[in-house]
Image (cartoon, rainbow, N blue to C red):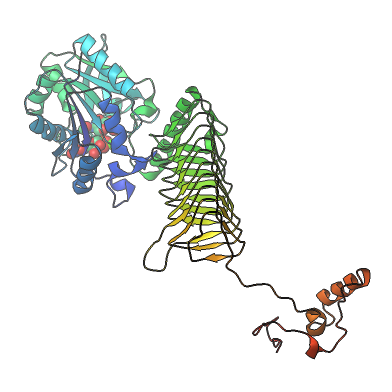
Length: 505
Ligand code: UD1
Ligand code: CA
């Protein structure tokens, strides 16, 4: 049988987080706590899914509207208690029949399977209310489950602050998750009062009211109490992040991924790692990253919103918004920024940064480069230290390198500029004009020699001594000038050799 509505309570203040961010917006595995709660609830395929918002409702409401527009919101202006919060939701939904599930926005580990087990138990028993309970070692602060002898039904939930010594000794607690008969819930909520230690309208009082009316109330003990835990502070938040990550890594492993070190591998909730992909240690895959079969990612890699193709390797890399093609090789020590597309078999190596650029099939950017706003064709070789000068302080300009072109080591490509297919730039060139297909472009100062300069300017230096030794073994190249200094050509322009030393005239 189906579920009519799931109500997710998320109006509380969450003061122990000590945060300006509403508690339910704190992220876990890359998604707000509330996303986890709503995703588990959505798994029940209810007709209505409602979040009750209050504290920080502008932030929470805006996030819901953008990210989960199918979720209805009910506003609880003042937090008058969990019973009042559910009334706010029912006011939005109107009269209902069937099963209504209530759960919390700050309980992120609860799985759809557990909610479904609660609903099945509830419907199979024909209960008016079924409470998801848990056995815990320290029940302090929780509502206690009071069961009847001998049939074991639940007769009441007593809040910690209202409980007597005998009730406080009970270690079965209320998780705060329930399945209700819609009509019983709506009726009982009109009858609850705030006559209790906290002056709140307790949802838990619905149990006592239903029992008083002679209706059956059951309790289902959660198999894993940890699943029902809420987040109250940041210590619990990181503990739960660990637990959820263990779950995500384990499910990737069971789906066929090799995870070399689960303790240092962090996966966001929406990451997909294919069978026969390998994740090495200290690797964080975030924000919808996908890793295809046979790819290896890590060690020491963070990928945010990236696609990694079949058989690609990504080592010691930080990348965001990048598409890494099949068989491409990235790293080590590589930074890929949004808009990077590496075609199949492309290589981007050590100390290379790429931004908003396409690197063509089989093209190589192996060492020490910056490639920004560029398109590199198939098989391009982008030499060590070559860069695009894409920014003049005001605008960004494009660089286009045609198929099979060769960009020599330490070329500076001053954009906008094009190197046509098969063009060649000489090492050390500053390219400001387009290079035609098949041309060599040389744009650098020519080398000139000043024979004997070392011996004359730096007599007694290590260099002079070495040059002298070399001259002894290769007599044709004298290290000591045979003529006077006046006869020797000097370097054009001033050249300072060391601080404090004059340059040659
Ligand atoms: C509640 C239960 C308690 C249970 C515990 C489990 C009641 C009266 N008590 O206690 O039996 O053991 O949860 O964690 O229900 N909320 C609103 N509006 C409100 C009050 C609360 O939206 O006016 C939301 C909170 O944001 C939170 C949830 O309801 O997500 C629980 O509220 P909280 O105040 O933490 O209830 P507890 O006192 O812990
Ligand atoms: Ca609580």
